[in-house]
Image (cartoon, rainbow, N blue to C red; front, side):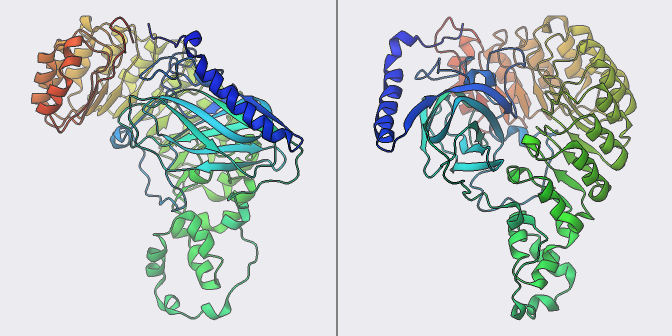
Length: 590
């Protein structure tokens, strides 16, 4: 079993926390205030987790309460563990690519987040986050101001490269925050990490105080970014070299500016405003980096700039009812009828009416990402409308509450190329769903993500082999699959174009499957065979000697023979990134 730390042995951690609180309280008392410490009490939202929705291992819920692992380090199931790391998911066939330029003021792109309530509302002063594996991914801390109904960035920094096997107490102090709140958000950038990051818990220190002023930070008002309101214009700047250039040239020059810079430049002169409002600059609009600023006024102010809009990313936007379903439908009607790509990950406003509006108003839509949209008002009626999006080829339903009936209708009605139904816990009969995929999507499907389909069985697995054009398949953490029956080999033989194959925690996977991959899948680039102890060093060597395009191989929690020879394998195959995480004790199991 994975080990929690023995709290009785590590009272210095609690002692250290108490000493910090005591020192802060002494200072607070001199100002007529009280210092308070508080831990995460409730998880509000998150973008991904490695664990299953209804379990504790590797889930966001492990952030709640006191640390149970720290200061121990290493992979541990009692931690919060985002689903991805490194560059690997971004070079996969299923990745939605975007050409959007990020502003220079964003130190690092946020790739994951978690929102949580603490026990008491305080004016935050100090945060300690206990990182126990591959630390260095936290790049932003925000808190919510209830008075202004705005999110405030209270800290941001660059990702750090730190010893992966050492635990760390990430500590950051805040100054000048005069309002009290209990809602916080951590954002992560893990592209630089060699393996998954894991967090054990946190503690927040703050003061009880009367609200004397509202904090604005660099969170400028929406108008500063996107307003159509009148502004002062420098008339002398109207006549310059740019005005003599063809519009195609000026549009090309300004296409190198990010969205924020375009909004700033538009305020300098009438000419710049005309150029910056050119709809050609807004064909691909990514508002996810500005999620904390985006509300209905923000979107309305974009106005005529969106007449050529093709791709829209509103992921993470609209929380705390800053965007309503009715407004979103109107926004689609007037600005988005030419959309080909719509990304709405973690958008709490997405409900039945929203998907009905998308189906009706976006006839050219090819890509739809609604992962982690879990509104109680998003039910069968809304999901069924997806089946009416006749041009749709990409659909991401990760962690949504879709169930069998609308999903079957979608599979039968659309010629999907990319489908993710990972961790969709409301699916009652995943085997029927996979059978439908094998029947209706056999000629079109290129990528399939059925990660954490805990009831998936071997007969249905064989149906996937009918999808002969598959480039990517994630079938990790499907514990009822028995490789001994030959079902995995049927996929490998039937899908020779596979470039990415994730089979984590299929304990019966052996040399037989590795030899089959070597024989039938010459283009294999990413292979995850974590959690099986049945394959040998000879099997891995044979695989790597044959699959010349291999870039990533995860053999974590494999046999002792494999673990003892990882360095040897890495020397033989330096072009392959070989991952091998393993338990700290000989008797530990993953």
